[in-house]
View (cartoon, rainbow, N blue to C red):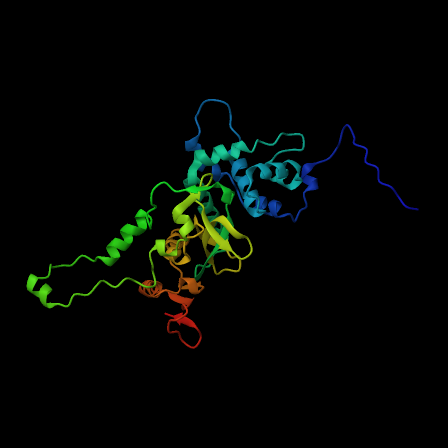
Length: 329
């Protein structure tokens, strides 16, 4: 006999939200091993001692963590998913009959806290991984991934004035590298006798403007000016960011450093910054650095050698390489 299921809503229910979340659920496992009370110390300077109580800052950070873990970038959609997902509600501490905060709370919190607080939140998670023995620190794997921006190509508008070819920080750094301070000024006679050579421009570190598509020099997004236009074989032409990451060699694969740039930023410009952040978090430099050929510049080989780091980086095409196609320094 074939059965038929007819749904008849009840007026009252006797159930427990805790019992509805599986014991092996990812969020339950995270809640068992991480104490999020450190968030209060990070957020306290940004709240007044008077007025109405705000949404718990731990809830805000847990909400964004859910969005990261499950790839939900829209804050509006994130809150809609939390509204109907029992595990999400349980993780945030909201029972079935409690109202979920509005999505605008997340936007206001991001503006209030700024990048510094969220970076501190990330750094704390790496520290917890170290304490749990999940960071080895022997080798760092460097790579990047494109992130589609929440903006359409229709939002592009002409840029106001020319955009500098590089950031002030990068310009000052390159200025000091290419113009070393001499201990003693050469005499005029020596200058006259010496052959005049044009300073050689480093072929492996071209200016950022040479790498940037012409469209990004002429226009920028009205709604997301920090994003840049890139072309991807899968997504085609779109606005994007690029997340540059350093990953530890422990099987847990903990991300020890992360830097977000416009999508058109070349990977090779971030190697030194990633290693700096890695050392800040782990407490020491790695003994090995592994990366693809986009990082394979002469500057990087010399830089890593000076630090005593062994590089396993494929050399760029057109350059001399060893039999294995790798430079081992």
